[in-house]
Image (cartoon, rainbow, N blue to C red):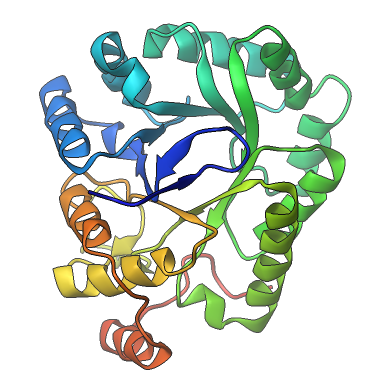
Length: 288
């Protein structure tokens, strides 16, 4: 089984690997149900979806009649205004077939203009705070991508006491001094406030070449089990983060298998060898 850790101050002990339900965006219900069997087999107890993940919420909905108590259920709104975010949440509840979710997150809040709108008067945050007061959500988080997101999350935490953050974390990105310093500063704040830190892109290799797409992920992932093992074990070797699984059902068993066998963090020398052998590169252009 996969290790569990307290998910911040929510009171829930989540498996260190959270199911990244973007993998359900374009699959049939039968395929989704087979993925559920994989999650149950490995004891995964936390699902992370979003209003913008295609049919993901619709695929999760049928699971909830029998398994709602088995999962911490998180979704996201990409809307920036309060009215639109409120509509997103109610639509998500309907699609998920639940009365409430455990976590609602501001989705991909990285651009300063989006941030000003979502966090300002009449912004999406107002709707999420209202929803929490109404018992529709238990916790509120914020997510994002790119080289600048640790700094943006620090800005968000200065404005509002979020319960969780989500951002990229892998060996390649942490070799960049500015990203590493910003990430460590963010994690220090989260540790002090008991804010859960979710990470993504743990098994990212680099952008796809034009004709090379073999998985549903928007980036090229590591594929060999030994490579996935090293990347997953490197992330899980940090005790204050969670790893969201990649957005491809074919990769799901490999990531969970790696997590179930986690014993130690690979050395920098092992990770450098992986980096060089797989030619890891940036998903987000040049660091800023």
